Image (tube, rainbow, N blue to C red):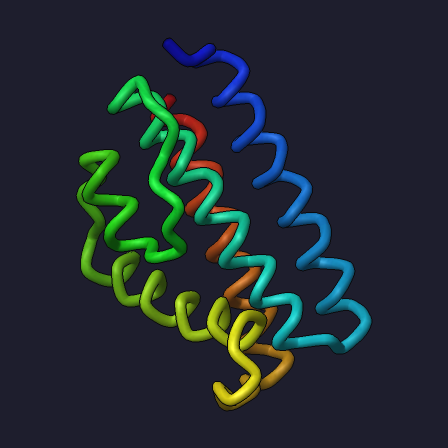
Length: 126
């Protein structure tokens, strides 16, 4: 049996740290790297919800939709579209032949704001 509190703390603290890292990277004009960390922040907050829902370690997946299904999270359409946008940027950090279009700085900060909103909502669900 896993220690639920330890797992929740691990995923939630990681999510908070990744938001800070995303902001630092965006402030230094490292847009794709910053968005990669936005994805990580949301992924870890969803994984905390997976732990709560399943009482088990979350799957080793980076797919936000799949993880949301495991946590039985229902998204509004606009939020689900945003998750799809973020998933484009997690691939860039893992696969060198995948080159997404770099969004404008303005859009990147909008994505950071949406990341903060979603992770806050996910944390409040716990």
